[in-house]
Length: 204
Image 1 (tube, rainbow, N blue to C red):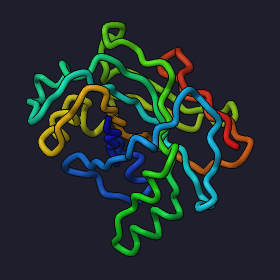
Image 2 (cartoon, one colour):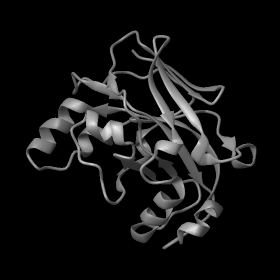
Image 3 (cartoon, one colour):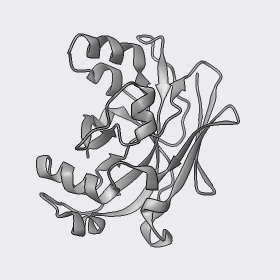
Image 4 (spheres, rainbow, N blue to C red):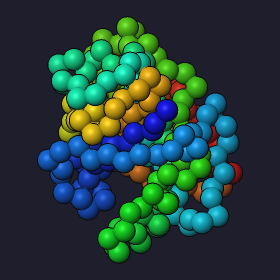
């Protein structure tokens, strides 16, 4: 099982981090040890002083595929949920400034939270019309509208599969909208997909 994460897939998020709008999808990987399940409490790691949340739509792959044509990509997933790409922003900035990889900022243990519940795609009229939001301590800090994605879910699956064979159970984090920010002990992080609360994590 792989965790494939898309970066810079919402224009306003690119701008808030000072990035150019990408011409092609940008992706990176997290190991399976990054998984954080069941809405368990998340413990802030001791190696970061600026740990950020990034709420994202997550797609679960349901068949093996390589070099998938975009028009067939919808056949390769059957469920969607929400996830949090926990990011050590201070480490990411330090490594990026030095031109170095930043796996330490993104791929650490428990850095990829996924919702306990995934919604069957049959219950969704159009994945690109889905809306989700992230609440921090009861206040909405991110509003995601999948129609605002720079690259659609099907485009992402097609693109990634050119480089990496997709397998059953792989998770595709599809990018985060604007509004990311830092977490502190005692925070409560919620993720709502349409009208369903899927993420509810206490920060410790």
